[in-house]
Length: 88
Image 1: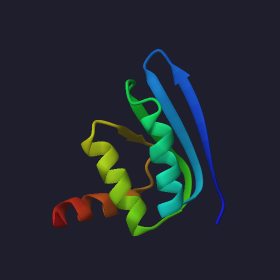
Image 2: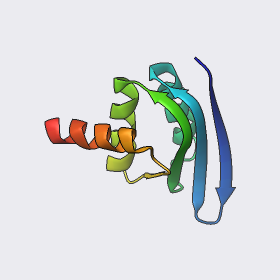
Image 3: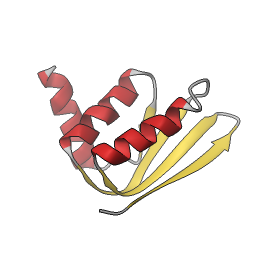
Image 4: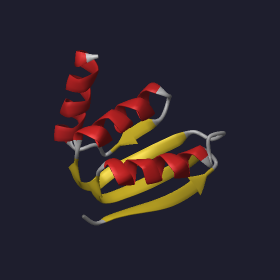
């Protein structure tokens, strides 16, 4: 599985631009990167994400619950997050 995480910082916060697959190890890596900037608003740009697993969905739901923002979220990912939150 391939993935890429790019970081962009501006006055409004930090944006992590994700591409490729997002699974458990990648979510853990991203969580560590986000912890390093915990004092700033975080945005995850999911425009180029091609595949996610259930653990990653839980991670993304947690990001939103903690005040993070998901942008360019593929519809199937948004639907899955919403379904998982409904089950909680």
